[in-house]
Image (tube, rainbow, N blue to C red; front, side, top):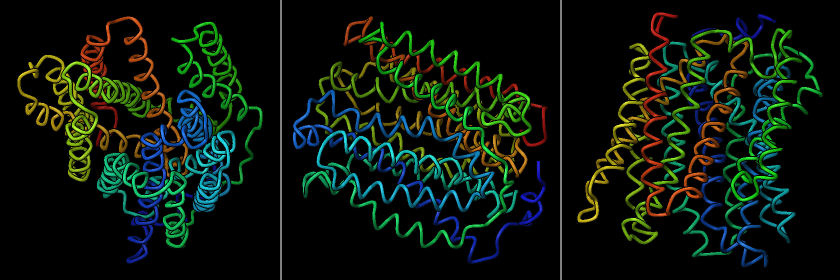
Length: 457
């Protein structure tokens, strides 16, 4: 492993004002990736009608984007370590922005899905390398605070995404959902000139490992899509994912810097953070699916009111992000994560058990408690992933962070799909909230295993 990345840029990071411009470039890129994923969901009925396809077929507009993110995030991280983080990050911004233009001019669903897949490939570069670049931008002692600001931007983008999408659809046609990315992408590319430029290792990527990685995570996502409705297809896809993962691990095991960061996963603190992240994101996604169904089917609320009652959650995550980031720079992240996971679990248990049929107002503090817990878990846990990895492997740490999140969210979605197929529609959401609470609590408790392993954990 080369040591150039460790010493080329000093530990205190970039000088002012370059430091703030670099942060703005990364945060604007995160807005692109998260907002684009959120605004497309609300427009699916409109897109289906305009392109004259079935609602089920239109879901591929979302699935294609997510599929590309999942299969590309680890290879993009490895490519960044090889060619240089800034070069691949800027390349990702170019691909994402160009693909947005292709989305806006798409004449048919296959064209749009292909353009969305290309968007996802560009987005994977941005997601994998954003925080890795910030690690070379700011001093080590401020990493938690910086991750907190990143969390705030992601949470706010996720919160306003449906509203932005609905507003664009009400004022104009669906292509503008993607055309709005063009000026933001231009701003990201302009400000990217301020990003640090740690040199790459020039390490060659193994094509067979990249194919095995794509087959593993692609099959996993598709298995989650088909498992309940078409188990004859979902089961074999799950088996393909398991076989490809085993082959990938065997092939990458001897390598000094493997595509799946097995070298980082050998470190107990990093490994625990990854497991905790998967568990907590599984709980978060399951609850994000269960709560709207509970409010609409169980409590008789319309879609607009449901959206209003859901909004305090991401807003509280955004509020908690910078605070938990500053605390993570001063206190043990294991205990912060444990407290956050416990708060999230408590909020989900209250949402499941509280008698809301006569008065819905208690759901506001309940969702705020859940958002506070998630915010206090996520930022310290992500900080620990990065400080557990050498600076030269920051890209791999970022790729693993994104992979853990996406795998956890896929697990949460599969859990809710199974519950809806096995339980009555009125009961499944509350069962889902209880199951989500178990996952969130498990994520918090797993974090305690980091105590005493390394300083600051």
